[in-house]
Image (tube, rainbow, N blue to C red; front, side):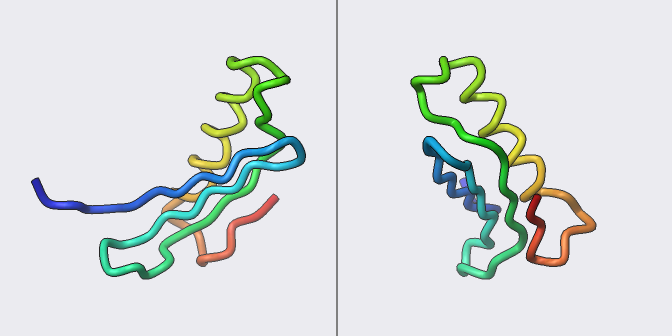
Amino acid sequence: MSLKYILGVDGGGTATRARLLSPGGDLLGQGQAGPSGLSLGVAASWQQVLAADRKSTRLNSSHSQQS
């Protein structure tokens, strides 16, 4: 199986950040969403992780997608 992308997610109580990398480590996209601390509940936290992921994988991203 060949690796096509690497997605790193940093979730916490104030924000959730995701970065999409090539197997060689080149930054392909990044996104930010609201807090995803588990004290908010699993469903609410997961929604923020998914939002950051979607923002990091937008094809029209210019390597600095934030909001």
